[in-house]
Image 1 (cartoon, rainbow, N blue to C red):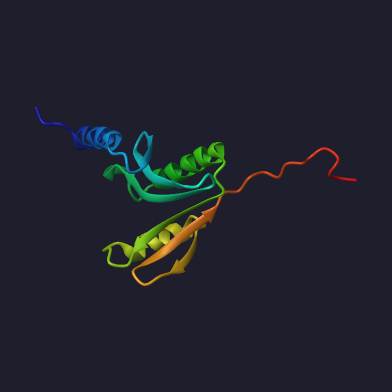
Image 2: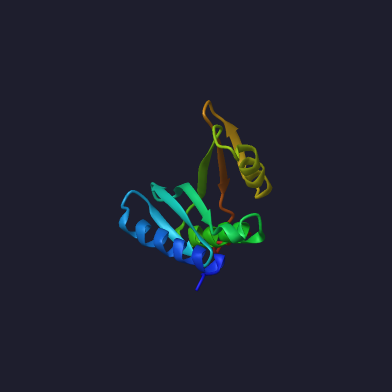
Length: 132
């Protein structure tokens, strides 16, 4: 009996998840159709090393929804900013860069990569006695 491509992708994703749990160099946040691999840099900043989305859901709103879910996680963690690198040697460099710009990320050109970053937006908090 032949497995569907979705079943095969979910099986492959499960293998990735298990392998990631054994890797100690970074942290992972898992979602239904993908994960975000990241490294904390101090208490308020994260380096996103990878955003993985199961192939059937790439180029769909699922990618953006994964990052939005990760932003909610970062807010709970008190993160102020996150960043990543898009390497110029990548075959999909231009496409990825345009996607990150669409998602509201700032960019800064470097020699081998483009730095993409975004500050986390928090709702303003009024402190008692601060308004007269």
